[in-house]
Amino acid sequence: MAQPSLFTSISSYLVLSFFLLFSLTCNVEAKVSCNPILYIVNETLYNSLFLHKDDPACPAKGFYNYSFFIEATKSFPKFGNTGDLSTRKREIAAFFAQISHETTGGWPTAPDGPNAWGLCFKEEVNPQSDYCDSTNTKWPCYPGKTYHGRGPIQLSWNYNYGPAGQALGFNGLENPELVANNSVIAFKTALWFWMTPQNPKPSCHDVMVGLYRPTAADKAANRTAGFGLTTNIINGGLECGIPTTAQAQDRIDYYKRYAQIFGVDVGPNLDCANQQHY
Image (tube, rainbow, N blue to C red; front, side):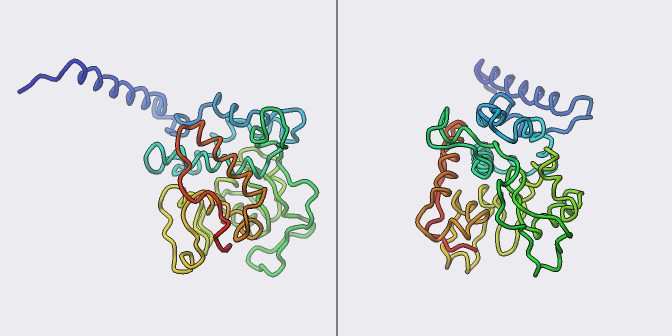
C-alpha cells in the first residue's frame, strides 16, 4: 500500500486542525453554539461594509453594532448557512445590500461613495401614512400606533408587525416602537422578513440559495430567481415591472459592492424591470 505524500499528510493535518479550532471556538465547554456567520463576516469586515453607520450625521449611530447583528442571526440558523460557501456569501451580500438601501444615508457625492452609508437610519423619516391596513382583521391596528418603516428592513404595515412580533416574542401591534428602540429585535425583524415566505411570495432566503420553485403564475410574470426577485418581494409594487428606478439601481449597486468584497459573482437577474410585481 502506497504511503501518503508529505503534502497529503500536511494538508490533512491542516484540515483537521481547522475543524478542531472551529469546534473549539464554536463550542467552548459545550456552552456556546456554533454560528457560521462569524467565519464569513467578522467585526472588522462588517464595519468596513457599513463604513459610516456610526457617523454623527446618522440617526442610527450606535444602533446597528456588529454584536447585535450576530445575536439576531442565532435565531435564524439557516441564514448564511445554506449551500456552498459562495452561495452563503452571496446571500449575506444580498441581505446586506437590501438593508443598506432601506436605511441608506448616502448621496451621489457622499464621502467614500453613496454605497458606504448603509444602516444610517433606523426609522422612516416623515412617513406619509400610519401604514394601517384597516381591512386586515387578523392583525388589527392598535389605537394610536403607527406601522411605518423601522429597523434594517424598514418593517412596515400592521400585517407585517403582527406576525413578526408573534414569531419573535413581542407584541408588534401594540409595541411597534421596539423595532426602532431595541437593536437585536430590529435585526431579528429584518431576518424574519428575509427568511419567511408570505404567500404568494417566496422568501428572499429561498431565492438566494436556490430553493425557489416558481409557480405557473411566477413563470407567467417572469419572476425569475436572482437578486432582482428579492427587490420584488420587498418593494415590487413601486420598483418592479417598470424601467429600473433609481431606488432599484441603488439596491443593485450596494449588492455589487458587497459581492465584490466577498469575492463572489452577483448571479443572474439583478433587476426586476421585466418582472410583474406581486
